Length: 117
Image (cartoon, rainbow, N blue to C red):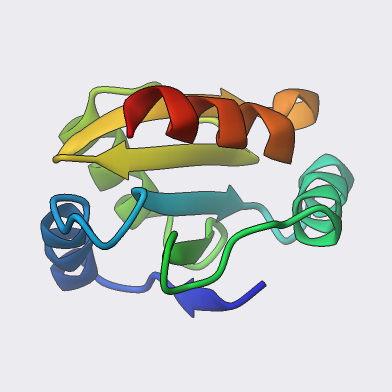
């Protein structure tokens, strides 16, 4: 899995623009707390079962410890509640999928993408 580090609000604008690009199935955001074992397990599970390339589903990794304000901006922008760990899929400028903790799994991501493409 090829992660793009999410570190600035300018990147949020880029993510929103990319979400409209027909070459992509959407854009994935993974919000990770580096101090949380549940978050580490979710990240590991996601990476072990990943089935997409960066050319079809660009994937961004947000370190919540270092970029908490950016996480809040994501919540405001996409009208979702902040959680950690959390996976979001952005498509056409909207959050079409949001889940957290042990509910993070690749099969649900695949189902969501299939429904929305």
